[in-house]
Image 1: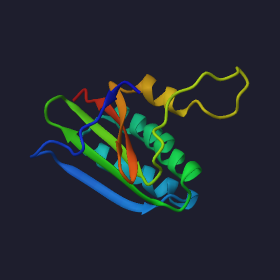
Image 2 (image 1 turned 180 degrees about the horizontal axis):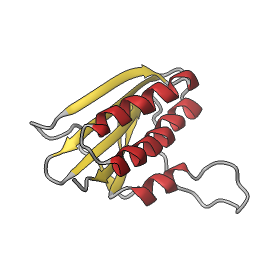
Image 3 (image 1 turned 135 degrees about the horizontal axis):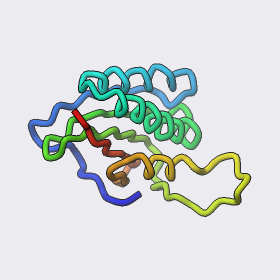
Image 4 (image 1 turned 180 degrees about the vertical axis):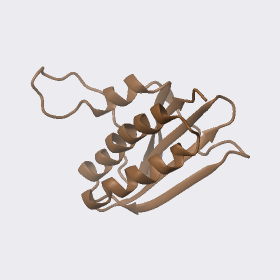
Length: 139
């Protein structure tokens, strides 16, 4: 994770948010929500990358804070040709990539998010955290 996100998107930014429980049954609908919003930009690569990012970030909430209130936000970053996907949950611990043995079956999600993002990071607040990814738009 390379940056710290602002507490909220800048004024005038287009923001779409869904609030739901962090449960496995909602993983596909949440991914579809993110893809639908990203699809409005007409960049199919960003749409599919956004699905992946959403899957990793929402999946972390499902795994580490099951059933908690989770907020998934997509906003157009007007300062750059980019969109930001953020997932906020009620777990106070900020995630960090870690060294893994070669055959580990989990623990690679944040590294994947970092690899496909222009930038990514976290923002801690008193009752939880937000993990975010910025994806560049090509159109």
